[in-house]
Amino acid sequence: MITAYIDASVVLRVVLGQPNALPQWKQIDHGVSSVLIVVETLRTLDRLRLRAQLSDAEVSRRRHSILATFASLELIEIDEVVLDRAAQPMPTELGTLDAIHLASALLWQESVGEKLPMATHDKALAIGARAYGMQILGEA
Image 1 (spheres, rainbow, N blue to C red):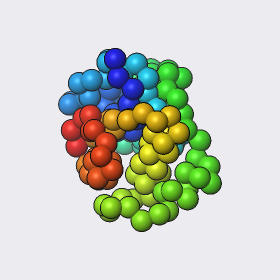
Image 2: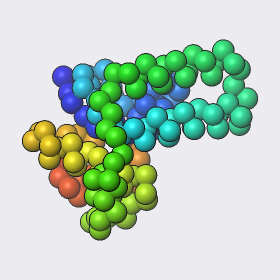
Image 3: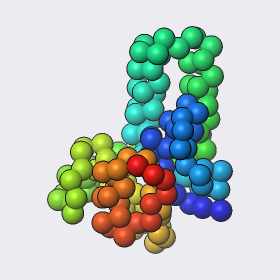
Image 4: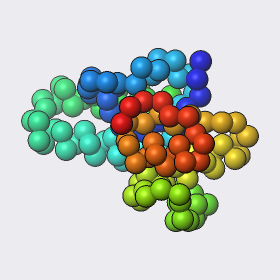
């Protein structure tokens, strides 16, 4: 079984039944993520509701799956320590949200003293995590 940092791209591919979902998804027994994942995934679902004109039943089913996934994750709060770490220079170019995810993962590793693979389909986040020596699960 695997402990891994999970980003929104992984949850969305699984819940939305998109192609190339994370092959190791069912092997992850301890998922860790930033609370940011809640906003990212629910905003994406709302955009899909509007753009793809999803039915209420479909939105309800997918939202239920997303919320069940959150319940199974260890969520890291976005506090001053995370924001400070995310604001520091990093070895690769990252946007704000990816920097918060990476900072959260790095701080978790430091506090627990355990390596944490990064499960992502986001290319920039994968490159940034790899620059810190993290194993990458998923394909961007």
